[in-house]
Amino acid sequence: MTDRACVTLLELRKVVGTPARRWLLIAAGVLGLLSAGLVAFTGPAHDHTLPMISFFTQSAISLPLPFVSVLLMTADFGRRASPTTFALGISPDAIITAKLLASAIIALAGASYGVLISVLATRLAAPAADDGRWGVIGMIILGSMLVQLIAQLSGAGWGLLLGSSALAIVADVAVPLGLWIVAGAIPALHGVQAWLAPFASVQNLLSGQMNAQQWAQVGVIVLVWVVVLNAAGILRQHRLSESVGR
Image (cartoon, rainbow, N blue to C red; front, top):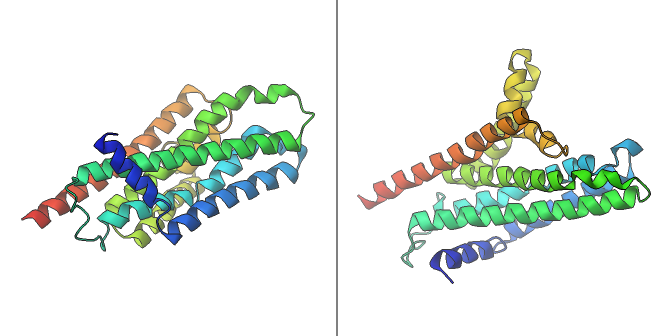
């Protein structure tokens, strides 16, 4: 096993290493299951579709799950990080990479769980429905993976950038949600909402069909909330490391 794989495995073990992280994983699983059940077995029959159930299920899972990555990042790079964090000779860059890989694995696991319970709920809610409803399952799977990856890696980015678990969790909720609300409330900013607010892309990604413009919007959201946010966090960590080394 390579050194990178070993470090990533160590980070994955940390995911269940504290009660807070375990409770967040449990909360994500329970919320996803409850959402799938509520949408599938209540409300109008025309809502008992795979895209609709997936939308609510994956959205519910993505609420607490990114906080696991926040805590994972701040455990070693936060304000209370242990001075022995790098005692084994592992570079900060290697640890950050391993944490990001662990975050991506968590996201894919959460998405897979959400797809599974959404498919089961759809089948149980309308067992006699036409099987043509399953034609969008490939897009639903891809969309679910992207939804959870964006949410999870955004949480990781806030953890790296802010260092404080509490501040990162607040920012992870308040900044994208605030942008979505403000852009939706001001008519002149309606066009901005689809391009910059992660919440606006979730329904498109889980609709079962995407056009070129919607893919471009997702690309911009990934650039802003995953690439730029994590790059800023990594740059901050480099500057902190340089200041400590002087």
